Image (cartoon, rainbow, N blue to C red; front, side, top):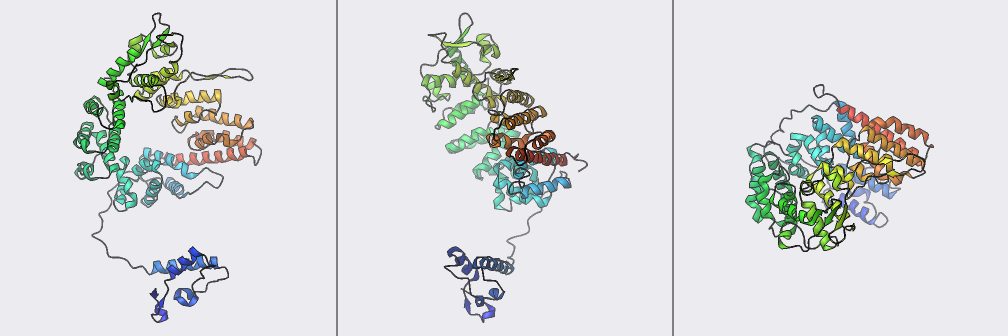
Amino acid sequence: MSTDRLTGGAPVPDPWESLHTAALLGTDRRPLPAPDQSALYAHEVDRTDPAAALLELAALETVRRRAGALPTPAAGPPAAPAPEDGRPELPAPAARRLALLLSSRGTGGGVLANLGELLPQWLATARARGFRPPAATVPALLDAARARSELRPDAVALAGPLGRWLAGLNPDWRFVLRTAAGAPENPGPATGDDHLWHEGLFAERVTHLTLLRRREPAAGLALLRSTWPTERAEDRLLFLDALQEGLSPADEPFLEAALGDRSKNVRATAAELLSTLPGSALAARMAERARAAVHLSEHGTHLLVTPPAECDAAMQRDGIPPQSPTGRGERAWWFGEVIAAAPLAVWPGHTGLVPARLLTLRVGDSIDETSSTWADDLREAWARAAVRQQDADWARALLGPAPSPLPGPGRTARSARTTGAPAKLLAVLPPAERAAWTAAFIEAHGLGEAFQLLGACATPWTPPLSTAVVTALARAAASGAYPWSHSGVLGMTERALSPRTADAVEALATEAAPGTAWGETFARLAGTLRFREAMLAELAVPVDAA
């Protein structure tokens, strides 16, 4: 209950509470407040439609409540101003484009893609160009990053010093202080000490360790050592991941000790990190096991496999679980783990053959040289090793040459023999080579199996890869397939297709029958490409000119 000065101070029901109750119960069960209950209801409101009247009264009450709020005294002295940001401000057209992207809540009205999906590319490009956003857009930028974690590295870096300053004032934006891109690369004494490591939130501690490892790997390792025995197992696991920054032989003693950790996940992570150090003791132990498990036949025509007979204590300490988590046979599991952790450099020395030649040999075992039981296990383990060790020569050999179509009607593609996850192997290759291999694959096989391969390619796609994708889409449309059967690739094209293909896509939209699914799809894609073309052109202004 409250009092109202127009009713002589007599108690009246709280207007907002009355409206809230009517909204919850429904106007048929709880009538609207009587007009004489408060000065608010003296306003003429059409009550013919109770639901509409309820909304109008709620709007009036909202204005009254806000107008009646009084400013509160300041809690302390005014905050210091935000640090200066020496970066040039965005060109005016690019600033307007950012405001449009941040304000978009859905699609472009059927004419364009979901504009929010273009925001990551805009942020990455603006960050790379070294611009800073207008101060007025920074709050909306931080709100977008709060809602979408994948935006945070670029959004926080773009927001710069002003973003960090605002994050200190608004708890909703505290994630900025826990994002590596949001912390200064060269902190001063106030942020460079270990206070955050000992008293910060877990995410802040990971960020602090990651940044320290980037600048001073030895200092980061020393800091982790200082609290390692008291850390929780799940925290130790993620702290070990941070050691990937600046990983070097100097980290080996610590990681060797972590092989004895009470957590099996920590042990496995330590073993994986050590296996990426070719000169580590663990790599040498794995190489010895690998040489015992695979050797060249007497005549050099086969690779003979002798998988481990048991998973002894030494193997378990080196990160090989005694039981397969996938249900594979135990010996196949141990064999694959050994080969995946062994340095790939061991094989040319052990067999005298280069990777491409090794992969052409038949695989048998010590009992039956013609058996191919172990062939897939060996190739899959080599593929994991190539990805783990980022070995482009092995990745290239495992992928094989790019597929090429055979001429003639009803042709079938001559496909390279790949193993494991081709997309992961592709990611090891240089960007241009990735794009060329994927373009050849699409020309030979179409888009049916290309989704993950395209995801491994750098964006925006190169013109040849973009042309291959557009050509494959045209073939799919002509074949009578439905657009939604390629929805994954189509969603990717809106963000990654080269804008140079806009003319070709517009031509496809014109050729398609008006109002058809493919016609609308191509028209929307063409509009999105034009939008991205303008978006990127606005950010291509020289920094000095901006």
